[in-house]
Amino acid sequence: MKKILALVMALCMIVALGAISASAEPITLTYAEVNPVDGTVVGDVALAFKAKLEELSGGDIVVDIQAGGVMGDEKTVLANILGGDTSVDIVRISAFALNQYGAKKSVFLTLPYVFTSEDHYWKFVESDLAKEMLAESKEVGLPFNGLAYGEEGFRHFFSKVDIQTIEDLKGLKIRVSDDPIMTGMVKGLGAAFTPVSFGELYTSLQTGVVDAAEQPITNYLSNSFQEVAPYMLKDGHTLGTIELIATDVALDKLTDEQKAMVQEAADYAMQVCKESVTMKQEEAQQKLIDMGCTVTEVEDKTPWQEATKDVLESNIAGMEEIYEAIMAIQ
Image (cartoon, rainbow, N blue to C red):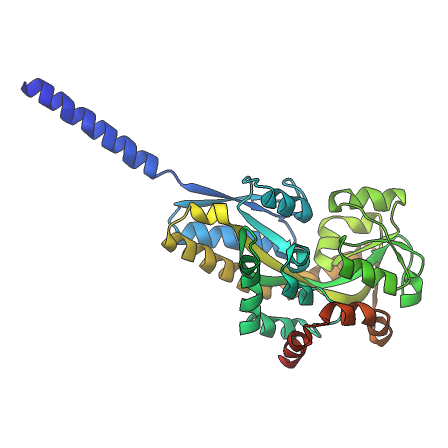
């Protein structure tokens, strides 16, 4: 009887140890990023988020960064999430991407010439208005939560041919994100929008499918676009605003305490972003110049603002108060 009792106790202990071992398995969150990690502001964001969350959780949560577009471009990843795909948990997106899914306030984050400087933008990020915008995805029933805003620098045009003025863009085939604001902006500038996925952009520039495109200067360099389009015109038409989102499925895996850790890690990553963005842009521009690229600064943006005025006015209709509030933050 004693032997049987000892055996039962031993079996119970094995089961208990197995349960402890199983519960000790870390939760893995897959983080999708379309750009490379090395040399980019968004790469710094991804690495900072991973390091902070793994530190806060004591290793109970592991972040698996899938960069370079291996999970698909932003549009594809978002569409997959909305379709029920659970392969991605955390996504770094362009902040305006949610506009097409009903988060209408996010339109202000991509309208041309809204943010006058990066300092203006970061003051907005710290405002109550920014918090309202982050919450909008849940308000309209999307299956993810906005965590934090950041930016990767102003976006500029780059081309296969020399571009030095607004007139030089006329008639060019330009790749931008396939949304009404960006395509409307291209039309206002007298160019032609050509739809190309981000993953095919290098080849499309190389073969002449498109003549030009636009990105923050760090992404231009990190994706080697200067090899096939060595002319950059720094017009700063929009700020490269970014947002971290976490899917409902991902957050449902976590305790309330762990969810708070995710939020803290996101906030921390965006502070790293703020510190990284200026330095990264300066370094990228110098590298491009050293490589022989032509980088031209736009001194007077008045013609650009005039050319894109219709896009601005049509998209803020009915939301003028928000636009005025953003402009007043300065």
